[in-house]
Each structure stands twice: as structure tokens, then as C-alpha cells.
Length: 199
Image (cartoon, rainbow, N blue to C red; front, side, top):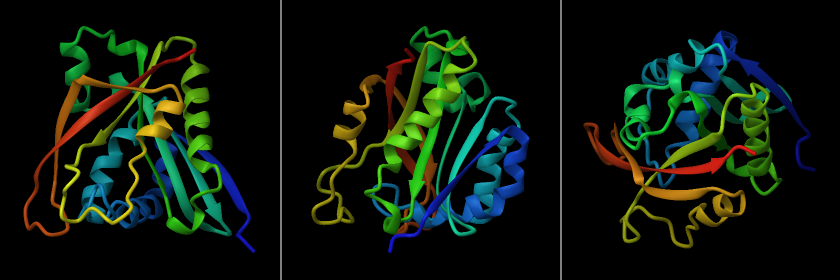
């Protein structure tokens, strides 16, 4: 029998109460393609500090028994780092009208149960409740179709995101840095943004 899931909404500084388990989950999930991320707890805690410092950030977490098995995050773009804000600023967006969605992560055993949609529903509802945001967005890493570590049968999430009403905007791009599993140092990774009006 599949495990029964429970859910928790955690806001702003309170995210610190689950920091270790969230960091460990991110490290586990992001080792897989397309991120291939060789993460460390220290790096994760530094990255997540952005969310803990935001008064309007959300962590929506899924639990099987007492174990965090999935999570998704969101916060105002104005609370994000300069590298995330930069392409929107350059394109002339009003940053205070944009809500940024962080990554959605889920252990393989719990996929296929509709949680991808639930994660978007929760983040969109959270952004909508403030009444001041007009756009939601997220970014995704771009990997070449012939990447040597691309698994056979891998299906990108583009079709799922499109069905959710998001559009890929090639004009909105950032470059993030992290070490892949086969790398000893951080290298640049192209990131492209997807956006959707917040209706």
C-alpha cells in the first residue's frame, strides 16, 4: 500500500525548523538528471537562507509518516538574489509584481500521485493571497539533448509546465553555478525562465 501523505505549510523564518531535512531532501533529489548536483549541507543551508529571511516565503512539504518526501518553495522576486532578479530587471518588469517559485522536489517512490499539480496549486494560491502580484515564474536548467548523463527515456517537464499555463521565455535567462557529479569545481549552468500571469 502506498504511504499516506500529510502536508505542512511553513512560512518565512519558521522554515529554519525543518532546515536539515529540507537540505538533505534537496541533495538527494538534485543528484538526478537534469541537475546532477553535487550538493553539501553547508551550501544548501546558505541557499535556503534567502527563504528564511523573507516574511512572505512559503515551504509546502509532503510527509510520509514523519519523513519529508517532497517539498516546494516560493517567495517574492524582490526577496530573491540579484542573479535571479537580473533578467527581469533588464527586461523592464516591475519586480514587486512578480512571485518566484523555487524548485519542486519529490522522491521517486512518491511521483505519479498528482503532487506536481498540488505543488503549483499551493504556490499560486499563496502568491494570490497577497493581492499585489501579477506574474509567477520559475527557472529550469537547460541541458543538451545529447548530454552523456541523460537517462534513456528521460522526459523533460516542458509539456507539464505548458499545461499549467506557463510559457518559456528565452529572453529571460540566468547563469547559475554548481559542480556536477563528475566535476570537482562549480561550472556555469544556463537557466531559462517560465512565466504565467497570476489570474
